[in-house]
Length: 223
Image (cartoon, rainbow, N blue to C red; front, side, top):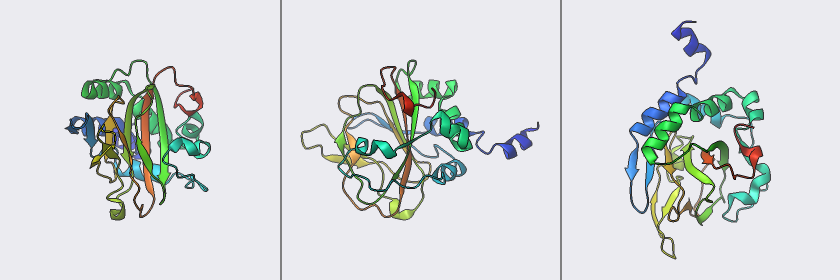
């Protein structure tokens, strides 16, 4: 098969390379903790394919500042969804690629050698918010990639807070198609989404590598 034919047959074949190029050019912010801002982490086609997955935004969601309050309606790139949707399979193959994992380790200093891949598809509606929080210790790396270029969502990025008792907001990651944020969960990596209007549908994927102690195995990309 020629390279041209392969590109036509598989529009997501370059996902791993696209992401690694974005990671190599990422802005490394060091205050109040280390995080990396991505641009072009996914192509427009890949973002659109994820955003067009046939999952309705969750109805009857509980908005109490915690995602886990809506665990029963959360969507993951499980083996079952990979079998149903080519974009789920392509994303799992891209972020599970050994070269991609090595690039993330080299860029961030994370040790992902024992990590299992978990990808969640999020659709946040008006009323959603997340309290300032730390990711649990079994998460080895957290990455968020945003999927929409709706200008009304320009302020819909993840908020970064300091470690003071009041958790002052010090930054908001840029929201836009293919933009994203990476950090290594630690004792000072406070983040969330402060209460504010969401003017549209805030679509994103959350990519984690989790340690073998992760209990909810049904959420993982590989059985």
